[in-house]
Every structure is written in C-alpha cells, then in structure tokens.
Length: 435
Image (cartoon, rainbow, N blue to C red; front, side, top):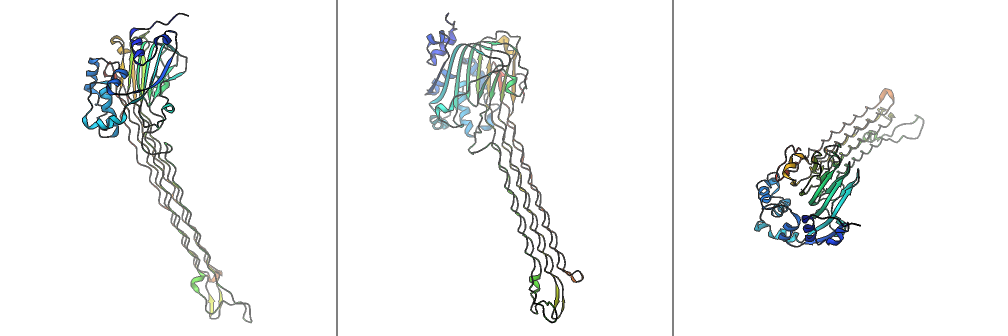
C-alpha cells in the first residue's frame, strides 16, 4: 500500500495538533480531544490567518456584532477577536477569560477524505466526551489534505467554533437544494441544537392551562305542607328568597401560554481552502442563526356556570305564591393571552479564505435567526345559561339573565429577528451574502 502524499502545511498543522505523521501517511484518520491552555496557544492552533489578514479582519470584526458587546457573548467576541484577528483582551475581561481557559477542543487530521453522495460529515464536537452543557463554548479544529465532496455531500458544524483548513477541495457538483438549508450548501455553519439561554425545557412555549368552568347555581327550593282539607299548601312562613335559583359562578380565565426559548447560536468559523480543484464549480457556504421557539397558545376561558331554576310556586295560606326566579348564568372566563415567542439566535462572523483568483467562485449565504411565532390567544369562555323561573305558567317567576361571554385573550408579542451572520471572503465582506 503506497503512502499518502502530504503538503507541508498539512504536516505542520498535524504536528501542531499532536497527530503522528506516520499514521496519517498510512491513510489513518486521527481524532483527538485536548485542552488549549492559553490565548497564545489558541492563536497558534485555531487560526491560519497571517498578519495582513488579521489586520484586515480587525477593521470590520465588530461591525455586525457590536450591539452585543454589553452581553455575556461580548466577552467571547473580544476573545475571538484576539484569536482570529488583531484584537486585544481588555483588562476588564481578564477574570472572565481566565475562567474560560483552558479551552476544550476536538482535533481531526486526515490526509485524504471523501464524503459520499448525499451524506453529511458532522464536524461538531462530542459534548458527551467533555460532559458539558450547551452553553459551554467548544472548538473544532479540522485539518484535511484532499477533501472530495460527492454530489449532495456536505460538511456541517452545529454550534461550535470551527477552524477548518483543507489543502485541496474537490467539488463534484453545485448543490441544488434549498438555499436556506444545509442541503443547499457544501459547508453549513449551523446553530447549536439547544438554546443558550438560562431557561430549561422545550424550545417551544407550553400551552396555557384552560380556566375551570364556573359551578352551576343550585335550584330554588320550598317545602310543601302535607295535603290536608284544603289540599297541599305552601308553609305560612315561606322563605321567598330560597325559592329563587342561585346564580352560576363565573368561569375562570385561561392562563397565558408559555414563552418560547431563543434560537440556538451559530458560532465563528474560519474556513481555509488552499486550492479548488475545479473553480467552475462554486463553493457554497451557508451560515444560519437558530429559529426561536413558538409561544404557547393561551388557555381557553372557563364557561360560566348555569343559573339554578326557580322553585315551583303554589297556593299559600294567604293566597297564590309565584314561582321563584331563575338564577343568572355566570360570566365566561377570559381567554388566556398567547405566549411570547423566542427571539432568533445570535450568529458570529464567518471567514472564508480561498486563492485570490477563486474568490469570485465563492457563494456566501447568510440567513438571519428568525423569531418563533407568537402564541394564539385562548378562546373566551361562554356565559352560563340562565335558570328558568318556577311555575305554574299563570304565576311563573322570571327567568334569570344569561351570563356574558368572556373577553378574548391577546396574541403573544412579536419576537426579534437577529442580524444574519457577517460573512467574509479573503477577509473582505462577502459580495451577495444575504439575510
């Protein structure tokens, strides 16, 4: 079996990563997990940019992400500027960065690699190895000699910082999938599968609980004296109020739907390709922020309780006694408001480096993190039925009043659409990148 030929840079990067050259010459794929102890080590291991490239990047590094400098992500951004550009760590960030180091990194070297037609090579870091949650920033370092992507094949990374260098990239077709999907790109920088906020549970807001229905009113009642010489008579000391049906209780309002969580974040990527085997086939790179979760639907309002029926009238010692009035129906409960959706996910810069003559053959597709859909409001509860007045027909009590329907809930408010990832080709803003 002949040994694999390696370029000088491939061998140098493999050596930096601690990957033995004899194994790589035999065609082995070497995958290791390691810690990066210092900022200087991170610059050396994670970035292939030279001094001129770093200076160019420094001029525009924060243009698309300056709005988040006061957030926790701002500390990460300033650290990444120091690693991938000519940034400096402010003294105020020293404590935060000290907690972040040593970095957790996954390192891959392979001299020749073919991704089969329709398959995806996932470059994401194995979080189970490190035993960390989705908020911990992890780093994927990929060093490939010759990479061949067969028709429909693609590389993907989900929510990790990616440092990718390939000496020769062979693209066998132009992808014809959805331009906003990983299937429409050769390389897709995708958001983390899990949201990075401090909340727990599903990305989608839970539906609001429905409001309990109102209790039905009791019917009116009256005691009748046993039949005597004058027939059945109502008692002399009859309680007229007891003859009326009770009002139904109001239905309770439905609860507001739960809030959706924010979309996952697409992290910084540095993609370095030293040679495109066939420049007539454009290199398509997609970067996309995560979609926010939908807000939960509001709970329906409870129905109002039905009014009780009035007691039957009759004949008393002093003459006819009208029937009791029917109770009023309870009002329906208001529908719960819809839950607010999660905001779109954040996204960091993506740097694509190719030979100068191939820059025009790079297609950069930048997709903003869209917010979720606002939750629908709950339905209002129906008013309770009125109680019927007691008889007899010629001397009946009045019917009760029908309860009012509850008010409609409000839909959740609109979420925020985040800025699309800023994409650069040869350290200048990519032409035609879109959100």
